[in-house]
Amino acid sequence: MNNSQAIHGRIIVGLSGGVDSAVAALLLKRKGYDVHGLFMKNWEEDDDAEYCAAEEDLAAAKQVAEKLDIQLDTINFSSEYWDRVFAHFLAELKAGRTPNPDILCNREIKFQAFLDYALSRGAEKIATGHYACSKRYPDSIELRRAADGNKDQTYFLHQVPAKALMKTLFPLCRYEKSQVRQMAEEAGLVNYDRKDSTGICFIGERRFNDFIAQYIPNEPGPIRSVEGEVVGQHRGLMFHTVGQRKGLGIGGRKDGNDEPWFVVDKLLDSNTLLVAQGHNHPALYAQGLNAQDLHWITARPKETSFRCTARTRHRQQDEPCVVQLHENNSCQVIFDQPMRAIAPGQYVVFYDDEICLGGGVIESAIS
Image (cartoon, rainbow, N blue to C red; front, top):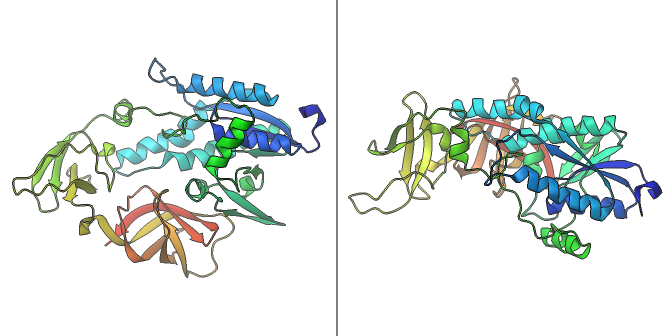
């Protein structure tokens, strides 16, 4: 079926070059939608032989569009990405926090700039290859977990406004990743076994330290143990986050303790990286957190204090907690069990069983 024979309205799919967005387009075309593709370039990178991700992604997206017989347009949102996402990312790093650009990228680019563009081109809705579900009501919408719990991306989507979700389809809602790859292979899509991207949103899989050093000057300082001993030197606090193990460059100790070191805090005033030995060191755990800039997908909860589950990282099991809301769009979260490696600048995301309620930016941990 070509687009001229479509029995449903126009849907513009964000084609990234990956298998997930390709299968999203495939499924919608099979359902009779007038499917168009859009490839977004959002970073004016200094590509060389090692970093040519955008060209490779576009080539893959073109192959998918040709195989599916759909129109593919390209657009450059690099200015919007810099202003709405990357500038904030750098400011947060300079402030000693651990930002999550993927969450801002979804809110500001994929579900705002892209959506606005698609609607201006006559689309009824947009679609993406995210692993997430939505349930629509006459005047509201719920964001729900995907069937593939290992790939569920609601954590990254919790800041997307409800009005944008109302205009979005998630065709992969009920599919496992293995099924997606199988469908792609059976349909003859050349990217069926392409590796999933793990780099910074739209920037790619660059060496993080070298990349960030282009924008923030290194400020070396001491690495100090929680016992007060200087055990090494860091290149700059922006290269580290709470819970980090790799890349510290700390050797063994004279007392024979060979347990690995972990970051437990970043002390901006003294430019000190605080570390502790052992995966389960008490300094890595906190009973709760303070969060700000809360966003609720459906509506702010009516009760100022309520129970739910929450996570502070994407690949993390939900933990039961009590949320106490404050007037200034902030909250305090106390977990039933201490949580490991709570990092200021990251997001806490709240769930009611399968429903993603929303979340906010972690301000501080509560011992």
